[in-house]
Image 1 (cartoon, rainbow, N blue to C red):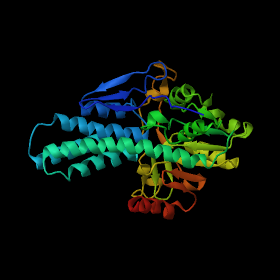
Image 2 (image 1 turned 180 degrees about the vertical axis):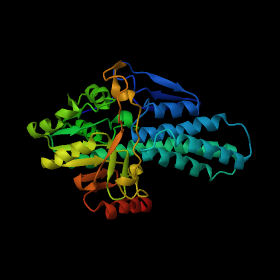
Image 3 (image 1 turned 60 degrees about the vertical axis):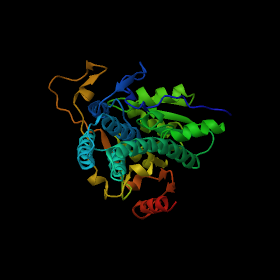
Length: 353
C-alpha cells in the first residue's frame, strides 16, 4: 500500500529566515511565522508556537544560524564569545526539553572547529541542517522498532503530541502509526485531549486525522475507563527528557496514564531519540519541571472558566518513574528494565557505528 505522510513540517529553513508552524493556531488555521531574528525564535519556543522536544532543538539550532548570518565582524574569538552568549540566551527559553540544550551545544561545538568567522558560519549552517536530517531518520527508525512491539489491528493510547509536527517528520510516539500505514496495517489510537493546552485534541487528533489514521479523541479523565473497556494493547508516549535511571519527563498527565496502565496490566512504552536521553541527569528528581502561566488553566479559547484571583498550580510536565515504563524505544533499539546500565550502552554503540 502506498502512503505519503502529509507534508506539514514544524520548521522550514530558508537561508535568511525561518518558517515556523504556529502550533498555537492549529487546528483552525495553518499559519507559518516568518522568523528573522533570534529573539523571535526564543519567543516561538517560549510561547509554544513551536513545541515538541526535537522540533524545539531544530528551531533553536536554526535560530543560531539566523543570528550568524546577521553577525558583523571578522575576529573569530569575539564571534565565538558572542555565539556563546546567544547559546545561553536560547537556553533560557524552556527548561525541561533536553533536546534544546543538546542542539545548541552541537552548534557551538561545530563553530569551535573553525579557523575563521566565515568558516564558522558555514559549519554552523551545515550542523543545523544535519540535526534536522538526522531527526527525520531517527524518527523513522523509532517507528520501525516500536512497530515490532505491536501487531496489525492493535488499538493504542497516547497523550500530548509526539508526531510529525513535534519533530522533523514522523514523530516519536506517532511514528509507528505512519510506518504501519505504509505497511498496510490498521492501527487505531485513542488520543487524550491533554489539558490545559489541548495538544492532544488540537494537534494529535488533527495530525492523525489529516493522514488517514484511525483516531478517537477522549478527555483526559476518560483514560482509565477507555483503557479498561476498549481492549487497548499498549500506551505509547513521547518524552522531553529521559534521566539516566530511565525516569521520564513528559507532558503533564503522563504519570497518571502510566499508573493506570500498570494497574490494568497494559504495556507502557516511551518513544525517545537518544538526543532526549540525558545521562547527566541521574533521576527524575533532578529534572527541572517548567511551570507555565496561570491563564492556561483559568482560560479556555480566550474565555475565563475559573474565578478571578484563584490560585493556580500549572506544571507543564510530570515524571514517570522507570518502574512503570515497559520499554524505551530509541533509534538504536528497544531497552527494557535496568535502564541505568542499558541506556549508556546505546551511546557506546552510537559512537562506535
